[in-house]
Image (cartoon, rainbow, N blue to C red; front, top):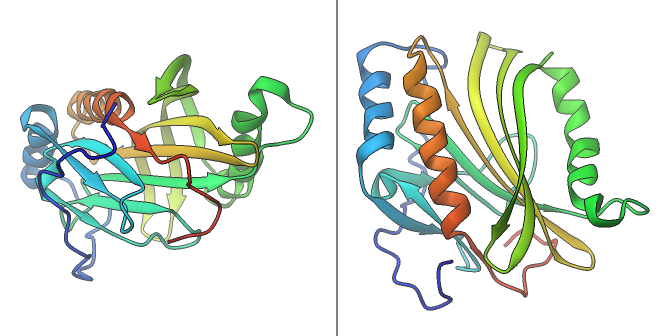
Length: 209
């Protein structure tokens, strides 16, 4: 777990507004995935410092704002979005007991699954910890339709209960773009590092900073 006073190795600068080239693959994407597999991990943080996660090749990530929903913190790797990481909060789903947070995320994600005609496979689920919080983590492969055409990517997310009325979700995605197993290897390393090192302050609420 990243201590509350942990040194932030390289604070990510704000997004420069450059556009992604969508599903374009090729050598540049493959090289970016190799960086995600092998470069050192550095700690990135939300604008207010209450959320911190370790990201592979962390000094090269930039803070972003996601389109379509509010995230507490968002990051992208490279102008062409070779990797994406985000942290958001939602309310637990009543009547679901220990699975109130993962059930709430399943409900929250349904409109997005339908809107992009997502087809998911290889879904695995495991029990982990995010700092002092028990969490449910899932990894999967997904294919969906977007304004730029068909896209496929590997994804991982972990869901934990931060307080009585706040669930925290840490999500990661790496587009395949014809890079084959490189994308999966990069995603697995990102997930291993991010979930292992994540710090979420106890004062985190529903409001976006």
